[in-house]
Amino acid sequence: MTAYDLFLKNHSSYATTHPLDALRASEYARLDTRDHVYLDFTGGGLYAASQVREHAQMLSEQVLGNPHSVNPSSMEMTRRVEQARASVLDYFNGTGEYTAIFTLNASGALKLVGESYPFARGARLLLSTDNHNSVNGIREFALRAGASVSYAPLTRPELRIDMPAMEALLAQVDGAHANLMAFPAQSNFSGVKHPLELVASARAAGWHVLLDAAAFVPTNRLDLRAVSPDFVVMSFYKMFGYPTGVGCLLVRNETLQSLQRPWFGGGTVNFATVQGRMHVLSGGEAGFEDGTLNYLSIPAVELGLRHLQQVGMETIRTRIHCLTDWLIKQLLALRHGNGRPMVRLYGPANMVERGGTVTLNLYDPEGHLVDYRRVEELAAQQNISLRTGCFCNPGAGETAEDLSEDDMRAGLAEAGADINLQRFLHVMQDRGGKSAGAIRVSMGLASNFADVERFMRFASGFREQTALTIGTVSFDIASCRVVRDGG
Ligand SMILES: Cc1ncc(COP(=O)(O)O)c(C=O)c1O
Image (cartoon, rainbow, N blue to C red; front, side, top):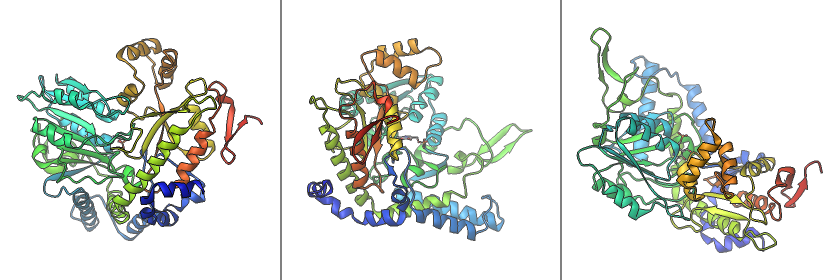
């Protein structure tokens, strides 16, 4: 029985996802043509060939100009941008309740919230420790306005939000002010799906809630009638690969009124005078879309959403569930000859409330950490795209490695003013071999069994390798054997 047969036997629902194999052959053929194992879907999704074709066709057939004027090229563009906006609201079931603001990416959407939220002395910003840096950065706006910032911790080893601690922090709402709580629907570090019920409970406790959906929506449905945060952010390239340069902030209409933009610019005002030194901000999304939108790319968002709908989110979820389950089990079973585990997994070791992002480090037979940067280099030699580092999510990484405040302070002091992740990593390795980074493999709608199997063959090539000599080896993936450099 082949590994694939065994996989199918143990994951019978995978058979229902076979249409994705045909899709891979027709729409993502470049993966196999180039013999490329793409395992960085949390970094960026892959686009179907037809998305690019249809978009290119539209561009080549239409005369499209800068929107918001009454000349025909402008009107046609305005119509297409608004059609894309309507399709986003429709896709997330937010029509009528939400406003969709196009941004450059999820970070741009987060910055809009940060700079416009009415933080004030006495107000609170509450963040889960698991957050992307573009969410963490909102704390700078809060602190500048005199608001207090708290972090809800994560449990170890699963890296889930510590719910009793979160609830205690939620109870500290200051009713006299606007208070904001932010968490990711799915972690870009561990793949954990945090409970979406938290949105309703935090809102009921008097908080505005910002849901970072960037890592969640590529493989999950978000229904804004069922889960209704005040703010939702995302980047469309993570959902369907193309276009880059377009993200979205979805805001509840009632919450939009409480935002205060700190400036105005082209396109965001109904009226502005130099002599009179005053301006009137445009209503709705227009007041938040600075300057000229990425208007030619925005219609491709509608094509991407349609593509996802045609593929079907349930099919994608099922496939990723099966592949991730297999991968985690295989990784945890990897042992050196002396019986020691080769892999340390961060986050849930099962499929309960988790997605297809798997983060790990490799260890040698003596338990020494294998430098993840070398792992990435070796993977690249095998045409495997994975990601290493801290994934812009320091809180989850610190909790995963049990890095304490003391560790962080010592690291900062020793590494000095020109600190970066590499220098910090050195200091941490001197402090009990802790790591400040990891290896991340993430799956998406174009993934198949061959991809994860190839990665497993690669990972098993580290068996019996000592961390110190790994700098001088290469792997032959076909035989899973180590080849000395120059040999
Ligand atoms: C959970 C999460 N939030 C926010 C972001 C920021 O997205 P972008 O870089 O597209 O602004 C990312 C990107 O990796 C992410 O994974």
